[in-house]
Image (cartoon, rainbow, N blue to C red; front, side, top):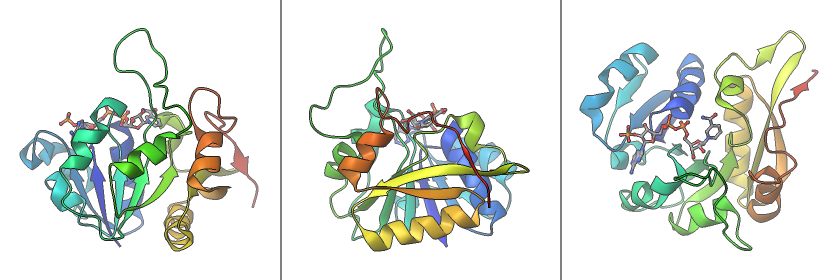
Length: 200
Ligand SMILES: NC(=O)c1ccc[n+]([C@@H]2O[C@H](COP(=O)([O-])OP(=O)(O)OC[C@H]3O[C@@H](n4cnc5c(N)ncnc54)[C@H](OP(=O)(O)O)[C@@H]3O)[C@@H](O)[C@H]2O)c1
């Protein structure tokens, strides 16, 4: 599959490494331009390339992996989504000290993201895991790393599930964007920071 990342930091690179290992083509992007990503993509290998945010977001499946305060600006650089899948890995952490969570009222983080990406089919995933649990091979001797995901579009979730399974995680459907997203949300969601293995 043709996959993009908006953001090329810790999470985007960890996910991209699994994707290229499974044979997917990945275009990574950041705020500073493709020329700043040559080392990153060369470490990932020939299936990884660098692009602008708009180029990365033209892929069939796009991972959003930017700090919370940059979500609106990053998504504003995407012309139109036209039903492509947006996998939201973000957590609504405050940008400035003291460390904490941004209060969105009744909305979940991914509903906020979805409002900034009209036309995208949003799937929430990877936000519940610390990077050190995402980066290694999720296939451990004791079982596969659980990967919770949530979303409102059944077909988008099925596509995401196939990719997640293929790269070695044990995907677990947490429900719709609001209810599942709330379970997965930082600041009290019971699935947040729950690192667990599934025995196959
Ligand atoms: N790290 C974790 O353990 C972890 C776990 C789960 C979820 N998350 C969530 O995942 C998200 C990414 O975290 P991270 O640790 O990967 O962050 P990171 O290492 O700081 O990387 C952030 C990336 O976002 C890019 N970026 C910033 N503004 C942008 C914009 N306007 N357009 C395009 N790219 C932009 C940055 O590029 P520039 O260098 O060009 O600014 C950088 O490549 C956050 O929401 C975080 O809460 C993190």
